[in-house]
Length: 51
Image 1 (cartoon, rainbow, N blue to C red):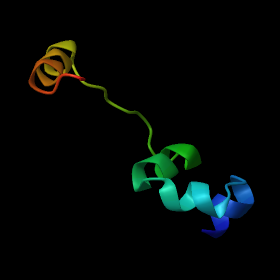
Image 2: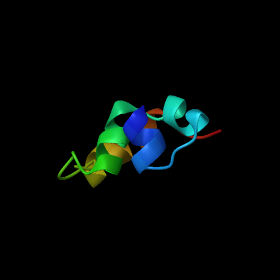
Image 3: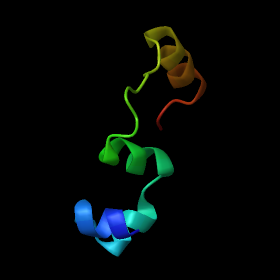
């Protein structure tokens, strides 16, 4: 919390609503993020369409 508030300047609301992955990315601890392949995204969109 000290790092998020002090170094990152996050408010308590931002800190508590963030995920561990978001905090790690903001601190530079996560070297790379992998995204979904297009085919996986398209399958998910077909299974769970927006209404």
